[in-house]
Every structure is written in C-alpha cells, then in structure tokens.
Image 1 (cartoon, rainbow, N blue to C red):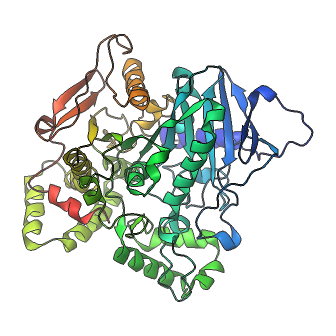
Image 2: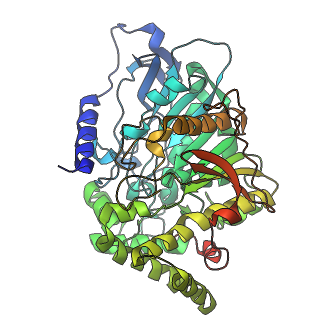
Image 3: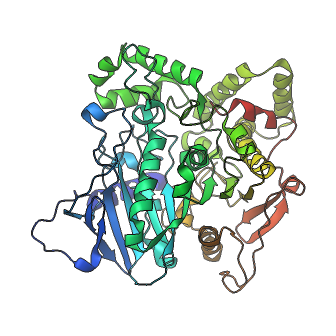
Length: 533
C-alpha cells in the first residue's frame, strides 16, 4: 500500500471511531463544569488533556431539509434543554474525494452545526475568537478533516477560542433557482453557503461569551474556498458586526461568478438531470444532484454568485471603494498552488484539465490580452505541465491576491500579505495548495499533502503569527514571544514597496514583492477582471 493510501486509511479509521450522534440529556446526569448555556440549549462538552471540545452544536433553529431545502437558514429559538456536544455533526452532502476527509464521515442535509475548542481554565478576561471556514472548492470538505481538528492548536495557544463551522456545499449551497418556472420562492439559493456562514457567525456573536470568548474580537480565517469565503463575507451588508479581522489563505474574491454564469451552470445541471423545474429537482435523489453537479463541468458548477443583492456585482471594486477598510486583513498564497492538483493526478490527468481551464480563460479575452497570455507561455521554462501550473497559479491565486491587497490599501484599509514557500516531499507537490494546513493546526502527523513534518520551530512561529494577528491585528512577533527568540517584523503592504512576508522553512522574512515575482504584472494581472469562473 502506498504511503498516501495508508495515511488515508488511517484517517478514515480514526474518524469512524470518533463518530457518534449527540443526544438530549434528560436525566440530569452530566458534568456541570463542562456545560455551557446558550440560546438554543445547554451544551455539554468533552475534555481531552486540558482542552474542552464542544462538537456538533446546531446554529440554526431548523435544519435545511424537506421544504427548507434551498431556503435561507432559520434563526435559532430559545431552548431550555440539555444536549451532548460530544461528536461532530454530519458533514454537508458531497461527492467523495481522496483530497478531503469530509466524504468519509456521515453526510446529510441536516449539517448546519459548529464546533468549539477552549482551554479548561477560568479567567475574567474574554479571549479572542478564531473561526475557521474549511475549503474544498465550495464542493467538498467538512470540519471533520483530521488535520484541522482543534485540540492541539488550542492546547498550544490557550489564550484563544477556536471555532469551526459547516455550511451547505455544491448544488445545495450555491445553485441559482429563481429563473426557473417555479423558482420565485427560492431567491437566495445562489448564496446559501455564505448565508449559512453568516448564521454561524451570528450564533457565535450571541453565545461565545459563555465559552469565555470575546464576541467583539472575532477573526474569520479559511483556506481555498474558505479563503474565498472570508474574502467575500466582508462585502455582505451588516456582516462586520460579527468579526473584525480576516485571514484569507489561498483564496480571494475571485472565487465567485456572475449571474449570467450562474444561470448557465444551473441550466447545464438541469439538462444533465433531465429536470425542468424546482419541483423536479425536489424529487431527485440528492446524491445524484451532487454527483451530476460535480461532473457537468470540469470546473465546479457551484460557487458564490455576485448577484447584486447579497454580494456586489463587482467584488474587487467593492474593496477599492472601502467595503472592508475598517477590517484588519491578512492574506497570502503558496508558491506552487496548483501543483497540488498536478500531484494528485499526475501530468497525464493534469494537462488536459489545465488546458481546458486555459481555453476557458482565453475565450473571454481580447486579442491583445490573448497575445499577453501567449507571451507568458513563450517565456515559460520547464515541462509543459509546470508552465500550465504556473499559469493557473497566476490567474486563480497570485494575481487576485495582489489585486485584493492593492484595492484594500487604495481604499485606506490595511493588509498584511504573505508568500508561503516550504515544500512537500510528495512528488510534484512542491509548495502546493493546502501545504500549510496540517502544520498550522499543529497536526504534523497528517502528512497526506506535506509528505513530512516541517521544522518544529518554524511551524510554531507560523501558528504564533496567526494567533498574534487574531489577538492584536498585527502578526509581527517581538523577540520575547517569538519561538526562536528573534523578532519578526511584518510590514503592512503598501503601494510603493509592496512588502510581503516570505515563509521559508528556516528563514521567515519580509521582502518586496518585486523580489518574489509573485505576480506577472505585464502578462497575467489583467485576468483578475474576469474572476476565476
């Protein structure tokens, strides 16, 4: 058995061993010291080492099943009951993937729940709260991912509260229906996954004080689709009361689509399913819907929509107009983002997929822009798959990252930018997508992507910077709190020097963007006007 398959099997077995279903406690027999009263019930956690975990807490009044499928999340109602919070709830309906563990855990439409980790200590001062939003292309994934389990992270950083949240994925979370003959009753279906995230943040705002958290000091952070989510949430009207800081990892406002694209995706799905109305969809098995949605296009068929109602028509412009200027933002990408996809399938699978993505992008471009893209490939060095990978890096990750930073600064806001360059030992992976996650959450044993453990001091320093940003809005470390005893100055990004923090395994340092060549300003930066879809 290969190392990758062995790691996957071990992760599967661990998750199955952890599964159980939370029950209502009616006999009064529970540990009162592990119980926290919330609006919608009292929840009893479990203690491991010095960390108390509360898992599978619902953040809605009714789960989105039956008549509530494709409807906005329902707010919680007061409840005096006492409930176990021992086990993760179900993960959102999705198609299986070896890249994400969510598909190996029980799934269901009744998935809107969250998890909380806190140190078992009392104190008068409320702690900063970090809310993790998982990735998975808005299509797969879940909070059950072993590398993102929160015990180790909070055990090392007991001065914060960690929360992870679920949200609807795939065609259940991001499918426009209002243009269908009977779609008028589903005005929000194109952005339900983001609405779920807002509902979770509202629950956290109203209840986290009971767990020792500060509702006025919340940082949302996420990677990939989670990074896209935390980049879009600031653009939602009224959202800023629920968080004050954002950490966007390998994700940006580019991960969304227009109304026209959204309608086209829905129509393609409907045709593939042989459906004409929402009523037809309601009669279709949900697994068939998700599987078909994933298969209809080579790119995910379900992403958030810039509908002009919940999200602005132009997300990048919203940043330039100051939509997030009151928020502290930290954002970055890895050096070889799409090498992750190359490593998963190998060149024979990657090349036709990447060529299709390239063709879709070129079809949107003017003749002048097509010439710039041609020049990018003419100047490229290495194997064909390496050049294709760097091209996808540019228009999916690097250019949108820098454009977001530039617009945030132009509007008078502030942002810190990073560039992660530590490499995996997995063949072709390099410093690929998600390379930092297992080490960020202090799960070095989860080597499916990394292939190895990173230097312990480096990883601890990275975690400390994330926590320091959540606590203060500034990720820089003074010598007295830096794990290696050396200060880590992290300049704000500006329009002149464009400083970024470079994360090399044995040298974390600030460098000008020009020295890193993160973005090809001449040949690819213009592509951000087309977003990723």
